[in-house]
Picture 1 (cartoon, rainbow, N blue to C red):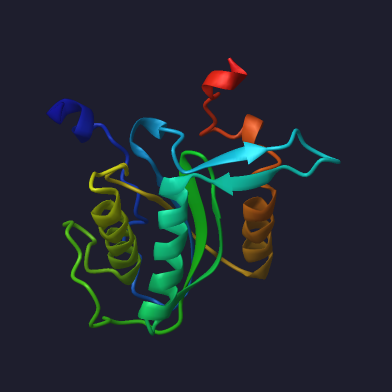
Picture 2: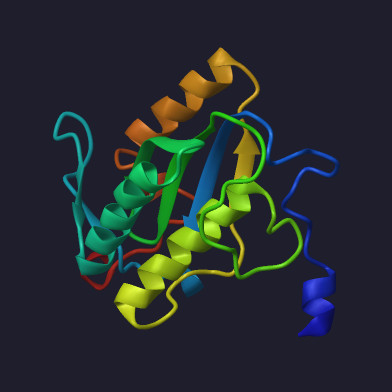
Length: 175
C-alpha cells in the first residue's frame, strides 16, 4: 500500500497559495465511488435529467448551505450533487486564515480550500455516523472569466452527461 501511495500524483499545484483570493472548482468523491448521494432521473434532452437527492445527498446539501453561511471569507457559488461525487465552485473572497474549525488533515491543511473540504466531510460524516468520502479531493484553480463560465456550464450540464462522466457507475437497475 505504501508503494501505491508513493506513486500517486500530487493533486495540489506546487507553489500555489491556496489561501489566495480566487475561485476553485472542487470535486469531492465518495469512497469506492459508491452511488449514495443522488439519482439522476430522465434520459437526456429534451427530458432534461434532474438530480434527486438520496438521504446522504440531502445531508451533504444541508452542510454545503450551512458552511456557506458559516464562513465569512468563502462561499459556494454553484454546485451539483451527483450520485457518487460533488462538484462545486468555491469563492475565496479574502486571503488568510479564518478562525473557523480546525482541519483534520496534514499537508496543505492550513489552506482555506482544504479547511473547507475537511470541515464539510467531517460535518457530513458526523451525521452519517460513518466516513463515506475519499480522503483526497480534486481542485482546479479558475484562471479567468471564460474558465469560470465553462465550469458553471459543466456543473449545470453534469446531470445531462452523467452516462458519459468519468465517475459514472451504472446502478443495479441500469445493468
